[in-house]
Image (cartoon, rainbow, N blue to C red; front, side, top):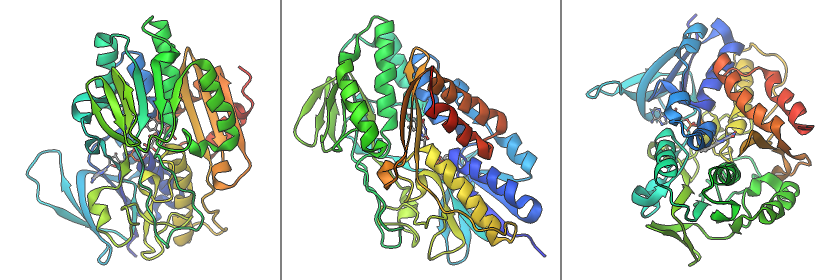
Length: 421
Ligand SMILES: Cc1cc2nc3c(=O)[nH]c(=O)nc-3n(C[C@H](O)[C@H](O)[C@H](O)COP(=O)(O)OP(=O)(O)OC[C@H]3O[C@@H](n4cnc5c(N)ncnc54)[C@H](O)[C@@H]3O)c2cc1C
């Protein structure tokens, strides 16, 4: 009997972890093929750290995953995915190592979409000339060069554009709606940059102007955390503004917001709209914005052999890797059950925000909460322990090739919930 073929599109956080979790569950009972346009994983969460340390993020944050997939017996194809035909179970892809390849086809029995999103820098007028960010290694290195070689001590704006969350009546009911895609990084950047400014005698906390289009920054952190965090940042001296309605324009020397207000800035570190890839918008299993519709088992309700995980999935809001990680586990178990390998009931996705950020000076913050989804967990800790956990996570991820053991997150929760240093 031929084995089912599982094709996974995307091999960054969500794709690699899902590939490795699926393999751990199904072992030799299925063939696995993974396609990504690059053969290195970008360890995005640590880019701000490298920028401030004056290290090119490309050096240490591009991780070679190939040996881990080889070890599992999974196939990897380096190619651009051009589209999917869900009626014939076909993915179209174009190898991209050298230009000139014809488009090829690959058939799947099960498809996992882990293609992340397109970050719409190009929708911010003036970003090409005046915008900065830390969302990829190119932008990280650009900001690093400016900060360390040219920065004159002027105001630094940190802001997000509006996120357009997808809608569909096929999505699970009562999902909360966010106005920004991912505001842990702006908060982290504000903390760690203030420490860098002071340490390098280039400015202070009040040099930083933090703003959000939403009612409050990092709204998904829930009321209990925000009631501590927002006043605390005010007391520390941050300039803070909410309800900007998004970024209208960036020009030399400042920003214009959609509410008509402006912000002077020598540097503007911006987080754009997280949008679905264009080709996904045309497909019959995506929501009105092109994010993949799934249930809480990460499965599309109409095309039962199509799954999604990570930022590409409609239910992944905010767009953070820790949600993708939890979804990877649910998805692997769901496929294990489907293939008759797991007998017991699979638990559906349970949402929880887990975020560890750098604050500079070997300190970090840790948030774990499910309040935004209606739960009652809420932990905010600051100190050396969250920093150590953040750095330890990268080490563990590289050592284990993305296959964080199931007790890994649970252990970090136990340690961080009771931070005492
Ligand atoms: C500065 C910053 C800090 C962050 N910090 C944290 C943090 O501390 N904790 C946390 O949980 N999350 C954090 N996040 C969010 C986290 O980085 C993302 O949620 C995570 O990277 C999403 O993983 P993904 O695999 O779903 O998508 P991606 O990381 O975007 O990966 C998508 C993959 O698909 C590939 N791909 C896309 N389109 C195609 C195509 N057409 N053909 C072939 N390949 C394609 C890409 O090459 C890529 O490898 C942070 C984000 C930022 C920007």
